[in-house]
Length: 529
Image 1 (cartoon, one colour):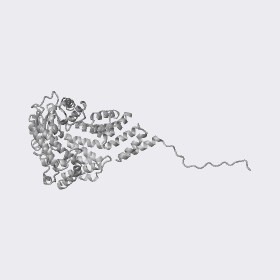
Image 2 (cartoon, one colour; image 1 turned 120 degrees about the horizontal axis):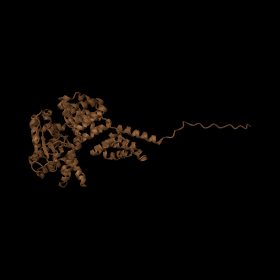
Image 3 (cartoon, rainbow, N blue to C red; image 1 turned 180 degrees about the vertical axis):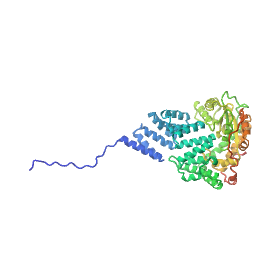
Image 4 (cartoon, rainbow, N blue to C red; image 1 turned 135 degrees about the horizontal axis):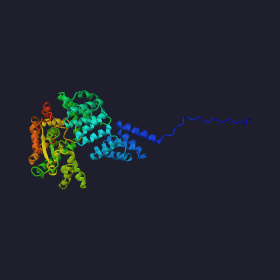
């Protein structure tokens, strides 16, 4: 027997499995969450991020992405703590600071948004996305001149930046620089050929300035990654209606408008009923409420004079403001939030639950609110003698404004009833305006607003005047003189600005408007035109 023992061969093994890297695995999950976010699968993205944060609560990337997911869902208050924590853990990450600034802006915290963005700008002073967010801050704050210049800077760095192109076009539209607005939107649609937002904006401009065929562009329109389908369908319908109107196809445009307004009318029906009841209260208050101002108004104390240009949506307030803005010493404020900011700060400083509407301000807080108002007025108006405000909702608080705001003046604007009803019916509102989706409820609302104007103009004859839109366009110089006299200014001798002319826009639709079924509640009397 051999003394040599044969060795047994080692067992065969498959391919050796490499140990997994848990950190890389989490990174892959985060990348998948970001992919899902961009694909608008937001609930799945949210679940992944929350799962990661259970294991790694200080994972900045997961905090950042979860904050973006919630912001995409428009849950801004829920988004805020995640982005704040991400910025706290990594205060040098300019992408988080930019996202956080955007959420602050959506929550109405303009000052915090600006401060946070300043930090991001210090890290990346020439970043187009940061500049675009800064432009959005200016635009939300109705500082359209600064917004337009900032969007131009962003586009000089990245001409394909969608949001900057839309922002520039929108800012120029508010400034009355319609040719540049059209050019900005047309450039934006070259880079984003499927964007319904750009197409809608183009459809709202005078047809003579738009060089592209918006109706043909609609064939390529698709929702963006972060765009709600219902919102897309609404924008599409309103864009098509406006384009058909410009093409002279009025019957088709009207049919499209009726379809476009049907869903929002049903969604807003309960809100409209509540609003109608409030309108009765506001009208009674305008008739019987105390007038806390002496004839001629109180002395502004060295501050700029506040001129409120009020009228229903689409009545011609912006046109009137453009005309007034040609007078030396006037700065246009557009629909600026100075009143709401001041009321909110007064309530908060007094230790009360927050409110922001002037008619909710108790008389005991008048002086505090006035101080906040004058402080922000000085910041916004600078050296201007007159600062305008065209927020239409202030009609409900005119008597309180006259009491709180030193030397306040009011121009009320009216317009032909059919013309204004059509233009409201053709507009896609982003929020509120519950009356705006049915011809009957629009007529009811405008009738109530005009009744408010009549009452307030009669009660405040020394500080208010009424301007008819049609008469303003027929004689701009006379309207300018009336505004100048109200504010103690002198009309310049040079040419006045081009105002456009939308008179008679309802002419092709008068029978359709007259025959439209009415859902009005018929609670408001004395509808004045």
